[in-house]
Image (cartoon, rainbow, N blue to C red; front, side, top):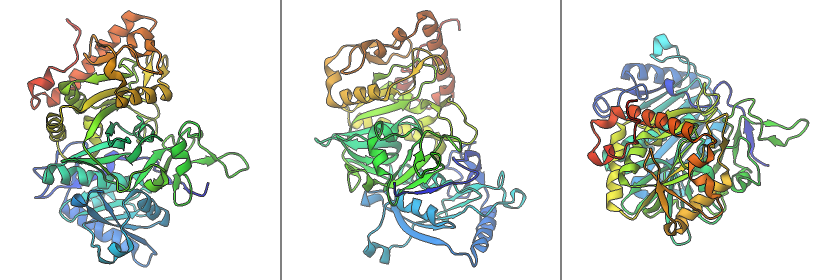
Length: 491
């Protein structure tokens, strides 16, 4: 196919427990220190920096100047230093590419040093084990060692922007994909890896703004990146033609295998990892929008992979429900996305990207609330790309074709003409009909053989929502609190 195929070695996904942030006078009172944002001392950072640069001494290295944020107002210049050339190709694919003239004068705002062959000594360097990612907001550097998984570089810069834009500029940073229709209507797709952000935003009838990371400023939705990092497990040309056709020269395919006695990629093989990936410049998507900037969104989709089969395949949220769902960030981790995850696991990830948020989740939720107040015509939808007719292992995964039809109907305004009914437990408004989708699928209770069992499980899931929200309740307003799902009486 013309792409470069590599194996990233021991690490085929992110290692969240080994990501650290330097705790100093700049970050001490602003970063939300937790098991997500793990502190490391400036002294340990300096020791690792000196040792990693000594490790590079007399080695051939690859250096690239790039930048993040398609909106020139928020441009962040990046210099990347890599031990391996294919990791540098990844940075060419994923970050924005300066012109030849810009490169002559560009100076880096941030520097990434990635040395997979350098392993830390926890006793000396203050890490948990030999691999690490360390972000230093004062020195504006990211150090990566012991892991060749390229996604650590991409998500490292994402975390940086999730600090700078909301904290210093009042801009909402978002873990979402975005596309734009022929009339200039922008749609946002929120969701964790594996819930469909990349797949569902790749629409041949709409221009792709970006597939993963964006900012929302006044009148502007802009891509942080210059490429896509798509999951390619079970990829077929028929199912996802845009992603399939993007795999060509300059693309980087990670951790796949070949069909026997051939050089044909076996995309169905997850023997190395379920988290097989392809990185490619956004220009490989025929209908990509460049520069990657659009206007204010018209529709916002929260994508969730509900492993319990409770949530409707599509439902419309009011402002309070949108805020509650955004802070909750309910989904299921998909196999292979993180080390140790081998099957879907129910989880709550605030703002659909808790692992990448240096600030407290309410900071991002407050910014979203302000945006919805400023733009009352924006419609917010919850999309369940997970199970129907029962939980994982009993029910069936929602067909991609049905999900696409529901999203298209929402964006085209087709659902403005249909009737809705509220979900008895969660309160979301569920459409009773949708073009090209069997009506019985739209009301999840109707897909279960045992209606009483469905109601019981719905209350159990609601109780999980309420329990998870307890840590945010003290900072949530009445509108958000009133959007909580019902909990079974005497439970």
